[in-house]
Each structure stands twice: as structure tokens, then as C-alpha cells.
Length: 473
Image (cartoon, rainbow, N blue to C red; front, top):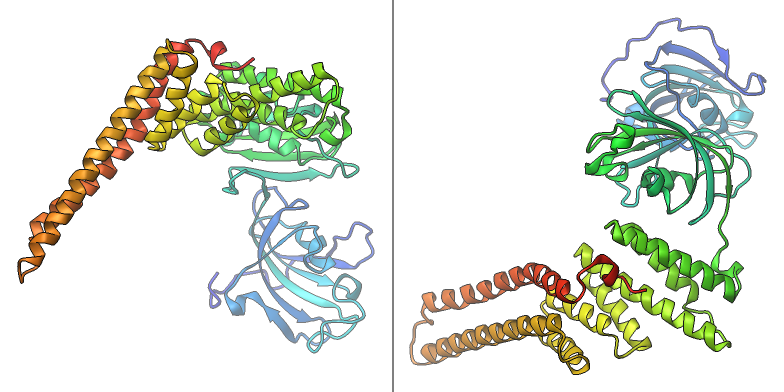
């Protein structure tokens, strides 16, 4: 708000009200202008305010955000400001203007804040609550999942991955406020999608304490997305608001809490869940479970030969399946290569690891390395049609690259010879042709990377024609 703007308020204001929980008179609020709506800030909310601070004893001003033309923000109930502000601002509505009178023990105490504020001074703050909003718990911190604590929970523990949850949900459309979902539900964190529990709810639950009640504002991408949810009557791309009460939860054992046998059992369950999500083409969910699968076992050493064999097979399958997931998402081919490299350390004849690494290398324009992977497969399995097809693609890319490189350097040397025999610089058109050729190669390389996804997919269909075959057992 501009510093020169005049705020119209009631000259006398309302009656001063004791707003402390103990009713000890430490903070009194006098409303100068009523706010709008019914919502008030909750603990943890970020509030945005303008204020003018004066000494109650003589009215002298010691601070003003209005003079600086710079609104002030802080989190309610986190001790970032004096106690009187945490107490008083939490009682205000958006747009409200009020005077908070804070006794010394709710302000700067015996020490004061010299030289402007003496010890035990009572202070008056004219505060305008401009806005407030909850905590941003979205993965990208883009405010796509905003959480507000309505009722504080108990204890300090919160659910972890794979925790067993019992909670009550009320879902509303953000644009209309209409309720579309009311239920008590029990499920496991990470498995919510099978219960029409969206990722935004799971993110919020992992921040909550027992018996906590919170409100979560969830954008469509972390709610039901473009598909919507016909079972709940939710259309595509709808933003929603959920009110959640965490009734109880049982934390899943962390890796360090499990013995070797338990890890083998839990890793197998994680792999099975990952495969279930893979078949549903829910790649992010599948990745999460496959990642947990091999992380449980990668540092565990077994003396029993059967357990050792089972651990190795499970880690190998998880690595191969992670590579398959990242290939499907087409956005992190380096991770495909990494997981395939680790899989080949466990089984240097793994055709799936070689094939998937070759696909990733094709997509990254590493044509010669890709060709090497497909050649190794054909050494192991000469009749593998998919590998032969991919090898042909890789060889064609290598040939095209070398032809362009030859043409490029030919033009470059011709240009140099021409300049040596002339006082004038090399023909501008020749240089332009040369650089256009470089640009043509880059453009074709980009197109090749895009095309490789479909090429690889078609070839994969030859050898891995079903989803079940793509996933390693």
C-alpha cells in the first residue's frame, strides 16, 4: 500500500478486547475497521501486514512499515515476532485494521529494545492484516499444495512412507465449495491412488501429527489431474480443497529398524507394488516403490546363499525396472544409463540392461555407444530382432554423423585455402553454408533424439510385447 494513502477508520474504534488465551490483559485489541470473510490465520500461516508502532506512554513512533512502503511478513505462532503479535494477529481477518496494545511481557520484556523502546514498555501497534496463506508443501515450491493447520496435533511424530493411516476426509471443489467427498479411510502411504487418495493428500499427511486437523488447497496436477475421478464426480483439471483429520497412524519400519529377513520380505512387497503401478502406467508411483526396493537391500550383507541369491535378484529386478520407468517418462536418460550400469555389475549378460541402456544412449545421441550395446546383445542372442533393428538405427545415425562431419570440415578447409590465395576474406556465402550445415546437424540430432523414443518403442514391442514382459520379475 502506498505510504501516502489515507486509511479511513472509525475515530473512536470499537471496545478494546482482551485476546489472550489466559485473559490476563497482556494483549488487547481495538478494531478500527472490520475485516471481511470468516477465516483467520492459523499457526504456521504466513501473514502479510502493515503496521505503525508507538509507545503507549507518550505516543512517540518507533517503527512503521508504511513509512518504508514495505509490508512485513512472518509466520504465526513460530516465535518470529513478539508474543503480542503472535497472539493478536491470529485473531484478525483479512482487511481488518486494529490497534494491538501489548503489555511489556508480551512485547520486549525487561530489556526492551534500546534506544527507542525502554524495558517493560507497553506498546501500541496499528496493524492492518493484508493477507495470509498456508505452508507451501509442493515438491517444486510453486504453491500447488498449500497446507493450513486448523487444529494442532499431539506429540511430534509424523507418518513416513508406507505408514498405515486412518483419517477422515472432506473434499470440496475450490471454485464452488461444493462437497464431493466425505469418508473415513484406511490405507498405506504410497498406495493412496488405489483408494482415490491424491498425491496432495499424501504429501499433507506426512506433515501431520496424530489428531491434527488441516486444510489443504491442491491444484489439479497434484489432485485428480486431466483424467478427473468419475467415481467421485470430479471432472478434469479441477482444483480441490480437502479438510483432513489424522485419527491415527502406525509408522512403517525404517531400514535400520529391520533385520535382513524383514528387508527381503518388504523389498519383495515394494517390488510387487511398483509393478502394479507400472502396469497402470503410473510411472512416478512405480519409481518410488522400485527405489525403496533396492535401497532396502543395497547395503545388506547375507551369509546364507539362498538369501544372498534372492537379494541379488531383487536388486537386479529393481534396477532394470527403474530403467524401464525412466525410459517411459522420456525425461532422464542419464538415470536409465546409471541403473543399467548397476544392473550389469550384477549380471554382465543382462540383455534387458544392455537393451535399455542402448535405447537411452540412442535418445542422447550417443550412437556409437548405443551400437556397442546392441552388438553385445546379438553376441548373446543372434536372433534378437529388436536388438538388430536398434543396431541398424544406431549405425545409420553414426553414418549420418560422419558424413555431416566430413562435409563440414571439407567446407572449413576449402574456406581456409581460399582465404590464403586472396586478399579478401573467404566468401561470406561459403561461411554461411558451413554454419547452416552445422545448424542442420544440430536440428537433425534433436529430431533424432525425439524419434529414437518411438524407434525404441517399436523395437521393444518386438521382444517385449506386453507390460508384464517389460517388468523384471
